[in-house]
Image (cartoon, rainbow, N blue to C red; front, side, top):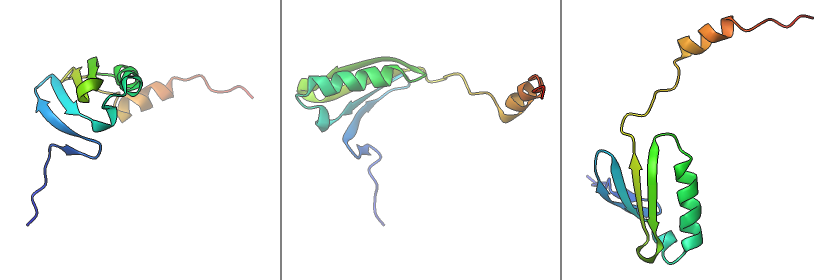
Length: 90
């Protein structure tokens, strides 16, 4: 029986996880501040992510997030709003 390492990522390793924060070591960011900055920008645009900090010298990414982000509307809610759209006059 093979053991799987849940802390392994394809491009890094999860080294620290709390309820509202994770820290990842991503070797692809090692000494590459431009790539780290782009990653920060992309992550900050995601719903539920509150803050991102990268340290390219040690290939570290720390992500603070909301553990209870708002849920997307249910299928029933979407159907309800569709019923009240004006019909095309043709």
